[in-house]
Image (cartoon, rainbow, N blue to C red; front, side, top):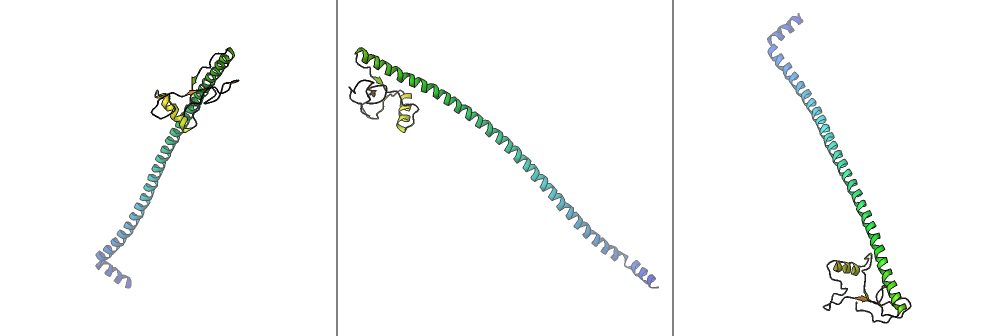
Length: 176
């Protein structure tokens, strides 16, 4: 009999019972939906992070390749500069040797020694030499910055105020 009473009570209150069951089922489905959404969000965030990581890696590869290309290009330019510098050094040495040889021949013959303008120091390793080289490129072959624009003349190809080989310093040094 008790079963019969329970069934009657259930039949009388079935709408309330279904409302309660549907409320609990709705709550569980909402919890499940939120859990699935959070999992999807985590997966999407992970995919976004992976996409951002892939983008960052591609950018890193591009920049590394570009940097390597620029380093190679810079090294090639430095090699060209050193090659040109060595040629200029050879010409500089040859010019100094020719001046020295001419002065020696003039001394042997007894003629007055030819005054040559100073060749710029090469490579220009002092600030003054760098300024002098820059002036010469502009067409100002003067080593002083005074009003009297007289070119400086060396007493020999060996430098300022030095005498040629086998000869005393027979000229006064120039003003620097």
